[in-house]
Length: 298
Image 1 (cartoon, helix red, strand yellow):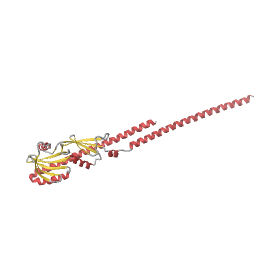
Image 2 (cartoon, helix red, strand yellow):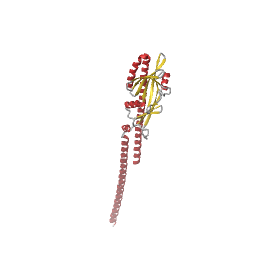
Image 3 (cartoon, one colour):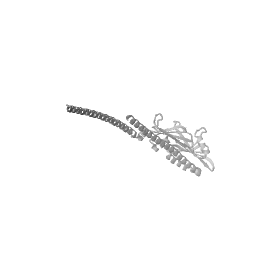
Image 4 (cartoon, rainbow, N blue to C red):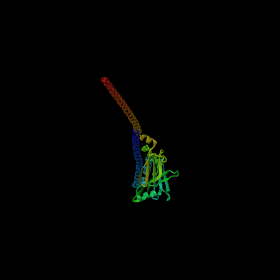
């Protein structure tokens, strides 16, 4: 009885713990998807903003230069992780650059054919739509991409509006804004580009779930990992309460079974004693009848 009760309690405890783990996995999958979609939406907003700036340049030509510079300063305020927004001409020379601090620089810097960013700009010219460059790294090793929106005037290519996105700053801002309460790591085109402070790929047994989205020329994979705080917040005392209650009930049941056995044995003893007493009484009565009959014969 005791062993059967303990086994049943342990079985139910395991079932409840697995239920909690499944619920945590579902929560992490939701958070990974949420962050991946947040990144995708941010790039969409960035693409749309650059496209509108390119359309205004197409509509007003050189007369739009002052307006473009004003737009660029406003754009950087809206997307604070941008290092700069710049106007590139049809020969891939940087003519104007608006920095993160709002400074406007008049340049005539040619983009070298060997520059890795040139491929993304040429892709935008060829496709006629906004394109994102491959992952690049600055001198400090920080990953970044350049988003390029092509400009066409009278059917001819007239250059691009480009914006440089510092990925670490971008994901930091999105992570803080998302309030995920989970650790997150991001890879773009298979290359790790971001991880929140609590993410630890060396922590054995910590649940991790990933979600992947395609964004222009980028394949972004977000991984959500349960932090100790998240595990505690989603843990329940129910499995352990059930286990404790089951063990207590099993012990009580075993105790009652033992007591019933003792009562049964006591009852058997009383019954045997009563039977022996009855047997002695019958023999005594038989003896008395024999004595009475002897007196009668004399």
